[in-house]
Amino acid sequence: MFTEQERASLRDALVAAARADERIGGVALTGSGAVGAEDEWSDIDLAFGLEHGVDQSEVIADWTRMMYDEHEVIHHTEMRSRGTVYRVFLLANTLQVDIAFAPRGEFGARAATFRLLFGEAVEQVPFGEPAAVELIGMGWLYALHARSSIARGKVWQAEYMISGLRDQALALACLRLGFPSSQGRGLHLLPQATTAALEPALVRSVDPTELTRAFRAAVVVLLAEVELVEPAVAARLEGPLRELAR
Image (cartoon, rainbow, N blue to C red):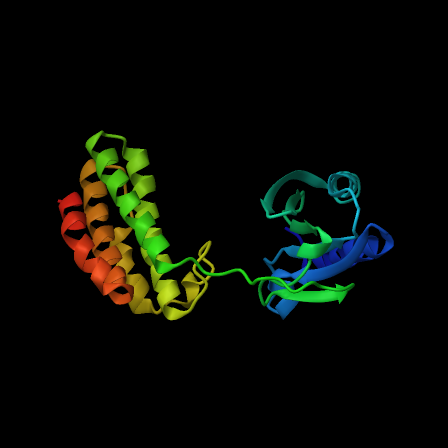
């Protein structure tokens, strides 16, 4: 396990290396470190704004090589959004380091967790929360597949689908109350009464009887959340969804 001092020292070293790299025109802290909300489990989140005309792939390759050579990286993965590449490194001491390599026009705040260290940021369209209708649609899709998985005896697929159904209900609750709805970030902020109502939807085993019980409970809480945000949609869904869970 890494220490907070090790994390701070590495972050400082990475920012210094970015300042010395003429291909990088700006650096920002992102994530919890940008808003003073770090704890002992927090990772390092940085965003690099690349200069115009720079070969992004070359910069990423050079930085990846440096991370492995100098900082005991044991693996990495990446995600993409528009032209920005998010390379995520896992260190031997279990510290996670996320570095966004953004083209010049994409270097800027898309959430409140962005603190510019140097360079110039470009105004960006903020990340938005999903629309309730998207979460509702995913909810009934999970419900359909939960039913068929149970009927086919595919118990682990059924558990997966029931959990996905429950997660959509939780996301709807977060959206309704103004909390972050993606990746479970706002779940700890939900009222105890809200989360208690969802506990029966937890799958306790892959026994078909238990899967059916949890499925029915998940349908009930999904419908309850839909009723609170889209009553007309809930009225249309109630009959079919309850039939699914019979």
